[in-house]
Image: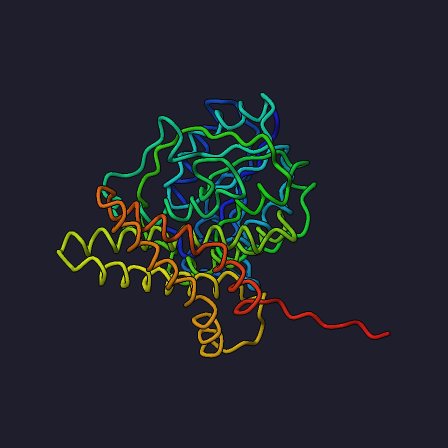
Length: 362
């Protein structure tokens, strides 16, 4: 049986730690695992250090991190310090069941490169009090990661991999909190397997997932797209952002027509809403493509570049509705979007968000 190092990033999780340690101890005892736990704490000063020091388990250690704070950085620090044959990462808040670790080890033994404790694999589940907004947020984030991996739950922070797989990775520079996705891409994990888990709500404390963290996730995706796709990154970014803009367009159109807003006005408002979404995402994704450019100037450039395409979209949608009255308005909108897509890509890539090149001296 391989030795197992469990890495847990923490900030103000003192009340959860005794329960986590007890459950890990029970798993190690039942499965006869050689297991150690590294708690990577971002200087919480909430009694976590004193709690660990007072416990009898010699296989538990807490590292107080006083610099370079952040979940991903804490996990990378812990993984680099780990000595086990297998590395496991999980949250301290008991949302990830330690009892799933043996199943993860079994999948690694069968040849998997990376094993995820998944909410969305067949048999997986989430706490009943997950709200709709939390569910849709998770699903959209998962969809954005689809160009990078086929797995259903790439957002999961509960995963396992061999130490040699981690050591084969390169150029780690995560932003935000989705370190598992970073490792899948940059460790070259091809055989990624998911096992179902029940994702429970935390017992104590508050979630660290903020709007800022979600925005950082978009920047992280950009870096991963650039790493994996190289020169094709702008096209991948355009397709992903365009897909979300299409979703916004159709949702707005459906809502407005259900409220009996005149079709022409509903189509126009939906297109404008999608344009606003696309601009916000493009700027967040592609800041590296136009460094130092002010928002106002970039907005003017973006509107100038995409307005002709939006007009083409609008006219094509209305023409489709006039010529094909049996079509649902959403079908006509999709046709209009398709007609404007090629132009919008060319305009946004080479006008609004173009990369700046410096000519080398001779």
